[in-house]
Image (tube, rainbow, N blue to C red):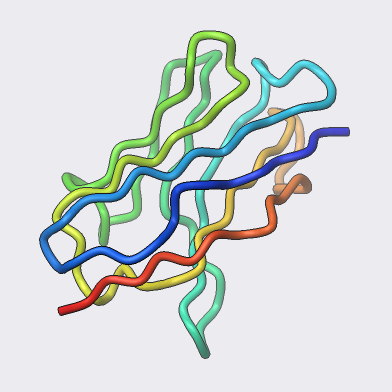
Length: 119
């Protein structure tokens, strides 16, 4: 079992930056594929970015490519999402998620953190 806790959300102005953190606890998490999703009011939850620490690979949705950066600390216990050049369309609840590499679905989820960008 893996427990995920997000932090770092809040209010930012358009063009500004925020950094989200996701602390993982429970079983060893260094082999997990970790991700950030976001959900704006009235919309589906969308994948924002993923990181596969074992392979050293990252994925970004087109809407955030070049502005957001996903990373992990060396111990693999904390995941980050650095968000730059924020705009109003980035306003959403951001969720940290994780899965074992052999699963197709993310089964571990954080509680979510609100990000609001004012224009």
